[in-house]
Image 1 (spheres, one colour):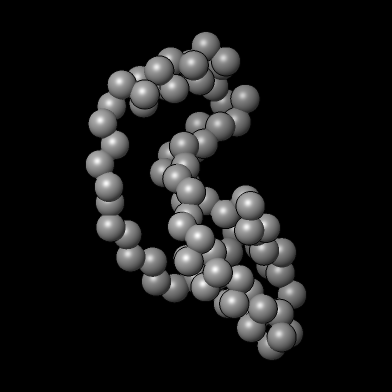
Image 2: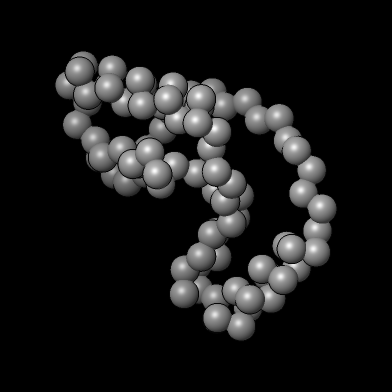
Length: 82
C-alpha cells in the first residue's frame, strides 16, 4: 500500500492558502488544488509497504516524543508535467 507520514496544517495557514488559490483562479490559472480538509505537509512517503510494516511505523512513532517545529514555507510549485 502507499502511505505517507504527514502533519496537519494550522487553520490560519490554510486560510492564507485558500486566499492564494482564489487569487490564482481569478488570474486564470488552470490547476487542481488540494481541498482544505486534505491539506497537509508530507514528511515521508512510503511507496509500497505491507500492512505489517505500516503498523510497525505507527507503533514506533507513538513511542517517540514529537517536539514542536517552526517551519518557514516560501514559494509555490506543482506536481505533474503541465
